[in-house]
Length: 62
Length: 464
Image 1 (cartoon, one colour):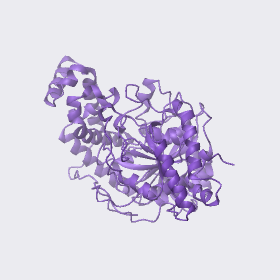
Image 2 (cartoon, chains in turn brown, blue):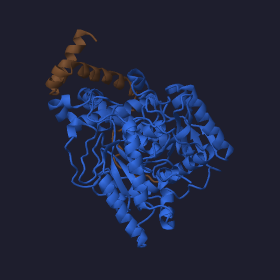
Image 3 (cartoon, rainbow over the protein chains, first blue to last red):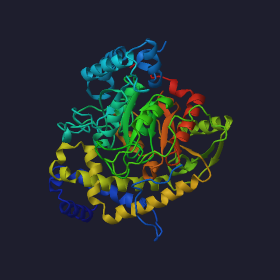
Image 4 (cartoon, chains in turn orange, purple):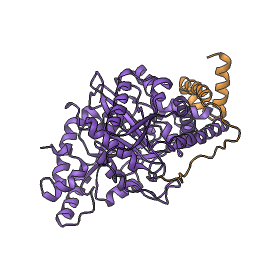
């Protein structure tokens, strides 16, 4: 991880109120942030018309 | 004659009626076994020996008086420790909630009590039902009865390990990214994740609201069906809860697979996440044997397994962050490292990430629904690898995400994981069946057929 990336993560972590975690578990904070980039890339493409409404209630039966 | 601790739940009612076994005798046998073996397995966080014996005496009196409540009357059950049992702590296997005594039973537990089941105690999990086995928590991780040096899967690890060890015939687990089906796969038992909304989550500590399911775990398919039937049903206390529109889950257990159309999702384990060769051979064997029994097996293509996993993870970590953010800000030292790292990721996900994942989710649901236009059941991998040693951190970290269970948390379809063989090292291999929404009947029909054909569910681990 570059110094610049680490600084960005630190800024984001402080904005999220994670000062204590940064002070005591800096490696965990950095590892957590690193996971996110890979997950974002793996999400894949969506059609513009595809709505995000989650299936909070499944209504179709067998 | 079967030792009492290996009795199937659905056989107990007959044994009690015939007087060949009583609830008190069974509970005493189980408590002896747990006392002797659980120090090696760590399935229990808290054993309620006194409460279980009291409940067994009550059940015995009622049964003798002819007041039989149903098939689970006098049947012992273990409860994953993120599910509330009134008067007992729900610790979620975490220092954060060590003193969190439940004021009331979870809906599923209340239904079990009304059915006359006996609550034995609270079972190990991964911390907050997330991550893998950890050694930096207030309680040790559960171990695999097939070989205690190996991990039992998770997060419902105590449920899976305790069933395989003969500590109880039934257990409740929860499943947000595969946590009922993972220990089912690793411990060679049966794990059912029902359709989203079929079983209430009231009184269950949430991991991710739109992915969480309560599931049924047992050593046999018939027992899982009986347990599911007891715990399912509409509960106004869970906003996702629905009334089952279907038949009882056990309706078609004896029907066999003749005429059943099975879609084999080969790309999950052949190209998306290439499986260990032993797993691939076992899965092909299941497809071959079901074909020989009269099912039609055809290849089905769904979205890439890695995309399903990413969607599951982004939604899970976003929703979990909303639940844990205050504690992560003020008490990060009270989490184990595994859960802390996974939960902290939610701080770096954006609203855009969450919405994009939900948009992908709707497309994935449509794809799976489309597949069910042509087939009745899907057959696919559960775990891509046999269980590994619990102290091998690198292999645990590498193999833990290599699984095909998350797709059906993303879509909410019912799924069953069960045994499909044994690895070279003597650890269980697994298979997964998936069905249409609320068609637990057909999923369990396929599972019961495979249970009879394969014969693996009758295998027991060596005595530890």
